[in-house]
Length: 128
Image 1 (cartoon, rainbow, N blue to C red):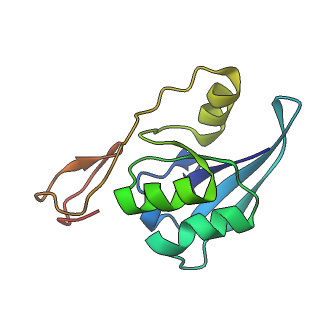
Image 2: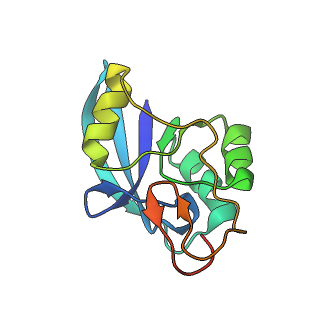
Image 3: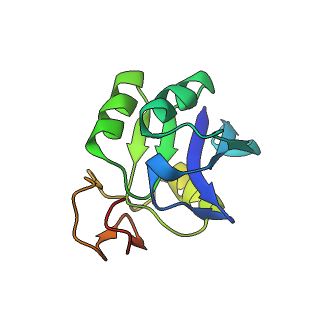
């Protein structure tokens, strides 16, 4: 099984569509066997679900994520654990242990007021 986490400086990155890299964990017998950081090479919202599918990812841990991206992940069969923040390795361990706290439908719809809160991070740019 492979689990991907939106990744920045050891933590879950707060917005799926803007992540510049994923940390992808290979899980064997219920524990992490290996992990690697994989750059997205500029792939944006629409291409990231396919990017993850090409890497064999079966589950994604992320912060905020828009409805279109959620649908794209659903179509690829990738399980989504959104609304997460903090240390990426700890979130993966919690997922494997069945204790990961996540939010169903932690969306970011790109039509917020300036300074909105989305997926565990603050924005002042007026969009996700």
